[in-house]
Amino acid sequence: MATIQFKDSKVNLDKLAKFGFIKNGAVYEYQELIVNNQFLLKVTVNKDGNIETKVIDSETKAEYVLHLQPGATGKFVTKVSNDYQSVLDKIQAACYEKDVFKEPQVRDIIDYINDTYDSQLEYLWKKFPHNAIWRRGDTNKWFGLLSVIPKSKLGLDSEKSITVMDMRADSEIIDKLVDNRKYFPGYHMSKKNWYTIMLDGSVDNQEIFDRLQASYDLAK
Image 1 (tube, rainbow, N blue to C red):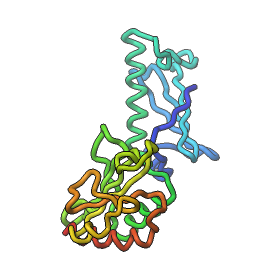
Image 2 (cartoon, helix red, strand yellow):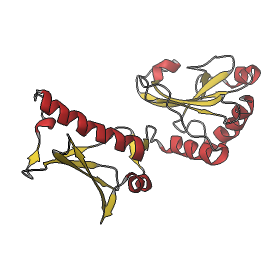
Image 3 (cartoon, rainbow, N blue to C red):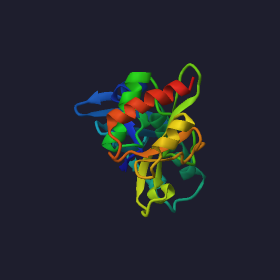
Image 4 (spheres, rainbow, N blue to C red):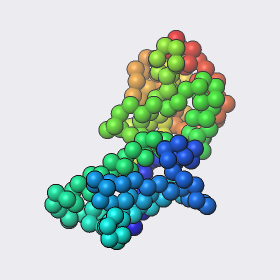
């Protein structure tokens, strides 16, 4: 048996049922034949999204584990491993959602933007999984950007990682806002049209919500 967690992801229980999982008590179970029906892959998911898998030989009913051994080689074990991983990849794509940003203030902002602007975070860069953007649905223009960076990138004397948010504003407003304590020049974007804040409570939620509206309006 193997235990798996998909990094930076959370399970959507409703999507498990649509995929073909069957609820059995507190867990969801799924089975699929792999390797030309030679093996039965059993997948169990609990409410927290943690996964347990078993690969059972269809003929002997014994559990097969070679695909889990890092040093195992050969065409057959590679085929088992590839089919096994293909099923897990399908489950992750169909039943799991990105869950990168977990800090309370960040979650508040994500929920607010979803409710207010019907905009979902988009993860555009595979090489940068901790960067994501929001965009207007009518113009496709960005109005917010989330990133995880060291504080030193903002000119602060610390290498501690922090989640930051970039928003749009008129250049005159940015000139007045930036104090390099709560408000910083745009880190990822044009410093003329964007500014950055740390989502550590230094700027309260209501102030961020008010400024979000201005950023959203500028993304016309």
